[in-house]
Image (cartoon, rainbow, N blue to C red; front, side):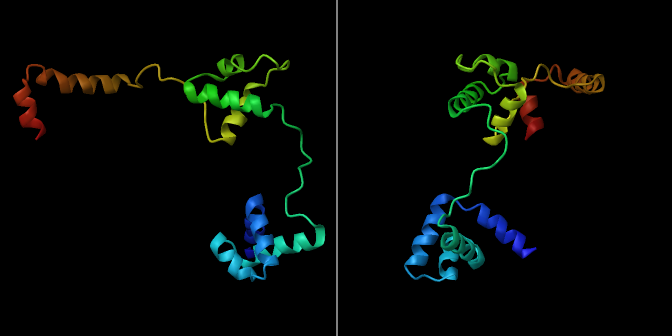
Amino acid sequence: MPLRRNRRQYEQLTDFDRGRIIGLREAGWSNRRIGRPLGRSDMVVARCWQQWITEGRVYRRGGSGRPRNTNDREDRAIRRVTTSAPTTSLASIQRHLPPSRHPVPSRETIRRRLTEVGLRSRRPLRRLPLTPHHRQFRLDFCRPRATWSVTDWRRHLQ
């Protein structure tokens, strides 16, 4: 289990942190002394150093998965539309994308791009979700208090 956690910590290192690790190791610092300020174990530092020694690189190789359907410009446009109008539908976001794209990204792609940055598309609330039971309770509460003045309410709320 600890090995899996160390591997996950290693994969979560930023490129900047990896560069710092290599620089400090070349300066003669120990793995433990480097790892503490970064909040990483000495094994994470050792793994990064080992990759530098054997492969001559500290960055992750590009994935072999499917290429992205949207570019950075379109991702920014999706975020801009969503942050300016949070209740915009996915179909409306599709219409607001730059016209340079021929196959317009699907709604699922747009939803994925919003999830990547921690946003969600939200529907506006059309009405309060009151059941007939709720309405009856509200009516039963309001009827006896319909003639109350401000002083009655103040006395009641204090």
